[in-house]
Length: 430
Image (cartoon, rainbow, N blue to C red):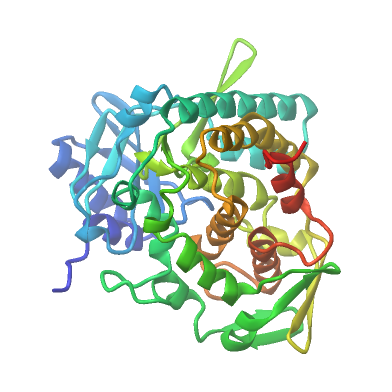
């Protein structure tokens, strides 16, 4: 039976038109759910709201911030999102909502409006114009959060069953975007809608999916073992929920990209706090818990994922096809600032976490493979990277797919930023 369109899905669709109808429907939703009279409803239109919507409204009680995450098929869900209490009880810094609805298709969080910026906005400003003092403060804030998260991971690490892992909503960010539910047919979901059978326009070259998916990438002279099609196939096999219980489970946010993190400054010090725990859980597969954070806060920057036009203005990229090799030349690289954040993530979280997994007999032999496949799915399935499909252009599309391959595949020889990161966190080294 076809599910009716949810109200959150309709609001998100109408918000793209700028007609004002979305604001009216949102006010109606807030009235129906919480019996409040929302005035001056304003929807934010920012580059980070890829699968969500947020904004502000006012009532006689003051000013408020709202956010909801709306995924395909949410209408059929049982309302298990938004469990901020799980994170708070575990000791993670999380902003608790004042109002919450967990009704399928009408899931929304309401917070007291803050004046604090999101950490994503702080970091983007530093990407645009560096400020040494602000950069150092931001890096230390990241270190503080990583240390707090690590403590919770170590405190809550426990063996899990395949059924417990499969019940967690985090799979909607990874595996379930590869398949058509409920049959589970592959390729399906976003993979099928975004890429299969489509054409890919790069600077000076256009390839169809059948050809591109079989290409081996050679990026700035470094050849990679697997292409896009092989990586999607591997992710479908290895990231299936039933296969992810081998590294145990932890309490985690699961989707803590920096647009879901507040940046607080008080008395010269800075602190980070989570919000929008749409995918929080108590049995999050350990190796997936920090994947979204690692990719979206670091490897997605500067600019190419969230600001494709800015990326095209700043970077050059070209591709030449030679047999089954796609030779990519590009001048994009993660900035020293973003790599400093990656170093903190490696030192303060990933390496001690993996060392603990190894000591407890919970580190799979192919842990590196699992992390890489998770990193690969982050950019490819969070939005359509094909030029012209949404906001991407030929330059940003080529950069994006190249970074995805660098994240997902081991190089045949040589090293890159991802290889160095994985070597740095490997508990079997050093």
